[in-house]
Each structure stands twice: as C-alpha cells, then as structure tokens.
Amino acid sequence: MFNRLYIHVPFCLEKCHYCAFVSEPPKNNELMEYPTLLIRELQLNTKEARPLESIYFGGGTPSLLKPEQVAKLLAEIAGKVPIRKEAEITLEANPGTVDELSLKAFRDAGINRISLGVQSFDDSFLNNLGRIHTAEQSQQAFQAARNAGFTNVSIDLIHSLPGQSIDQWRADLQQAVRLNPEHISIYGLTVEECTPFARKYSADSPELADEDLSADMFEYTDAFLTESGFEHYEIANYARPGYRSRHNSGYWQRDGYLGLGVAAHSFLLEGHGVRFSNPSSLEEYRREVTSGQLTRVDEQRLTQSEAMEEYMFLGLRLADGVSLRAFEREFGTYLNSVYGAAVEDLAKLGLLLQTYERVTLTRRGMLLSNQAFVYFIQSSV
Ligand code: SF4
Image (cartoon, rainbow, N blue to C red):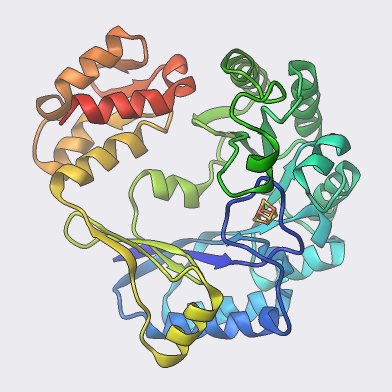
C-alpha cells in the first residue's frame, strides 16, 4: 500500500563535481521518451494505492521536462490513482533551467511547490561545485517562481564547502532568508566516492571543513534560522509554520510510497514494510518496462525488529521525535522494553531526551545524529 509517489528524472545538463546521484546528460531523444516509460511503469503497477497525499518530481533535474509532459504525467496518474485535492506536488528545479514562463506553465500543469537547488549564493563556490548556474540566476529563479504564483518555495543550500569560512556560510544563509522562502534544506558537503571531488579532495584535505567548523556552521544555522521564524523540524530541514515538506515528512513517518523511474526507491506497507528500487541504468529500465517485467532491485522485506529500528532512526530525525504511544500502537510493545538501555545511554551522553510522551534528539544529538544512530543500533541488538 502507498499514498505517496516519487518520480525520478535521471537527467542533468552537466554532472556536478560532488554528485553521486543517478543522473547524466540526456542523449538523443531520451528526454522526450522518458515520460512515456514512466506512464508505462505506472500502468504496470498493481499495488494497492490510497489517494495520493503528495507527489515529488526529484532527480536529476526534473525541471528539464517540459511542462506539458508533467501535465500529461499528472493526468495519467490521476486516471490511475486519485490525487487528493490538497496534495503537495513538488518539482525540483535547477535555477539554470527555469524562467517565469516555464514556471508559470509548471504551475498550470499542477505543480504547487518548487524546490530550488541553489546550494550557494557565492559564484566561486558554485563554480567549484560544477553547478551550471550563477548566484544571480538563483535569485532570478526564486523571483520568477514568485511571479509565476508559487507560494511554497524551498531552497537547498550546502555548507562545509571546500575553503568556506563561517562568515561565508553566514552570508549564504542571510541571503537565503532575505529571499523569504517557506522552506530551507541544509546539507553539509560529503565527498562521495567516485566523484571528481573524491579525486580532488582527500579525507584529510585542509580545504575541507573539520568537525569543529562544521559544528559551528550547524549551530549558527540552527540559531539564525530559528530566530528568523523557521522551525527546525528535521535534522536538515527548516520551515515556516505550516510549510514542512509533507512528502519528505512521509518518508520519516514510514508512509508507503511508490517510486517511478530509473533507480527510484519504493517502500510499500506490506507486513512490516518492503523496500526495493528500480534498475539504475536507463537501458535496463527501458527494456524491462517495455517488456512489462520490471525487476525489483535489492528487495528487502523487513522483519519486525528491522522495522522497529527504522521507525526509531527515521522518527528521531524529526524534532518531534518518536511518540512512546505511537510506537506501542505500531508494534504492540513498549519502546523502553526494546530500546530502554540505548535510550538511557544516549540520554546520559546528552544526545537524547526522554519525556513521558516521547524521545527526541537533543540539539547536540542532531549534530551528532550519525554517531547517535550507530550507537543506537549497536546498543539495541
Ligand atoms: S543538478 Fe543535482 S542531480 Fe544533477 S548533477 Fe548536480 S547535484 Fe547531481
């Protein structure tokens, strides 16, 4: 069962130097052909669907699709699965690929939320990242989204860029707030294997931010955005009241979602949950979808204990944390009878807080979330 839909668009005009996502420049007529494959995949789906709460076009660069292709896709989806009237329908957009006209057409097609991949407002960093747009284009794209009528716009930023000082990061954040978006996602740069950045920056490169600098950036971000009226509702996400990403919140709450497209991941509510993804090469995806036999890659049927672990570390990403009562409702057992020791140890370390109602990560726990999750899993076996 699923009530959310993710659509992966695996094309970008150029590959950014830090990027490990499944995306590449489109060849020949791939961009024209791709929506047809998505529709074919949708038609193959036989899984039970509830009315859709959210649809998310991610990538890659979904804004490379034509608005009429998006409109056709949404019409096909609506023909197969009801879409709730108030559903959140997001399109990720690269600022170098949109203008007021195209954004207006996307809005007419049914998109009601834009997520802009700004990453930085400093051209020298954008250049080093291999982004195809300038800071000025990001500002223009944001304004174009407003002019096109979007009242729900998110901005993605990356901190801990090579050579970035805390002052430069402050300037990026201040510029983002001046634009007055409804939502900001903040990621710390990670140098992924097999990317140009991995060849350029070794783990001990002096240009990469050390733990102290990254921690300072996290602290400043939390303080500044909170003072500016944003809720820090998830480790990497801030929203104006009422504007949390509903689609991504569904991931953290373990709602079922169907992923369409190359390398798209799905999570269906069957038993304790089943996770799988689509083939990660376009050729394979095309062949399988066309033949009507789509393979589930890395299918994992979760056991109850795996589902509990997931429930904990996805739920703890949220500032609201995990409700003791909701855990009990979901699994028929007390959270503390399964994870009592881990909760106690992490609380002693100042990473976790337990009240009568819920467990949440502290601010320090959010900063050290990866260590907290690893510790959590090891201590709870
Ligand atoms: S735009 Fe995004 S998905 Fe595309 S190459 Fe850059 S980082 Fe990767």
